[in-house]
Image 1 (cartoon, rainbow, N blue to C red):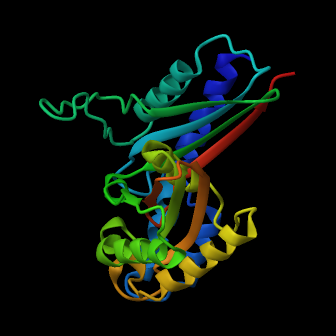
Image 2: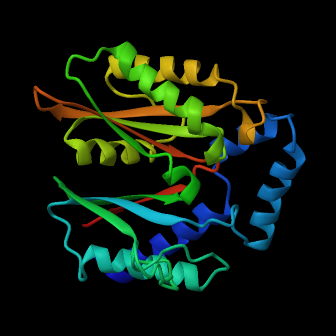
Amino acid sequence: MESVSIKRKLKKAIVEANVFMNEEVRRVVEKYAGPFNEALKENISVAQEEGLPLCQDTGMLEFFVFQGHNVRIDQPIESIINEAVEEAYLENPFRFSIVSDPLFSRKNTGNNVPAVIHVMPVEGNVLDIRFLVKGGGSENLSRLYMLSPGADIDEVKTRIIEHVKNNGAMACPPLHVGIGVGGSSDKAMLLSKLALTKDLHERNADPRYARLEEELLEELNGLRIGFQGLGKGPTVLSVHIEWSPTHIATLPLAVSVDCYLCRKGRILLEDR
């Protein structure tokens, strides 16, 4: 599989995620009739017509790479991804949001790399790359709770609902909520981010978790935080859960959110 082809498709997807509104979200915005509804709709039109970003915070990019064991690439996938991100941001009017050192200098890298990249080997001959454009406001709402292994569903729901209730208005709602349950602490956080790559209408394949997603969606919308925290329209666009087996003495619960723009993308390539 040629790196040039992968990079070209990734660059296109990255630009589109920043400039073109997610169609599922666009339909929600079109129905919204609350405060500043015309400004929200105009923002979508201007961004698309002028090739400008939907939001000034063009984010940190986080990638989830599912690489089939038969896929052979002529360049490490991490370097291909970082080249695609760098070129997409240098060639478009996108803000650079990455600092090289998190604690002392906080000097901007000037090209929006490095991206955060998770590579997960799988069977087959398909390269599946999913990504999120994560703004600082939504990223700051990420939380990890290490619950008692005896915690019940009500406690899990309470932690999630209280978190969104107390903080949701700060992340440009309505939110897409991703939840990771199980695994280790870092695995749960990864799962919560992976959950955000799903389309809004998707539901968990396990009917128990699908039912919990629906219950949380209803209860979170009952908070009535609304568009941009103004109390009108939905508070949450969708809730998705990813889970993993865990240790008998632990119950990791992670929560990640996306702002209403839900900027994400995906490319699928087959190595023949």
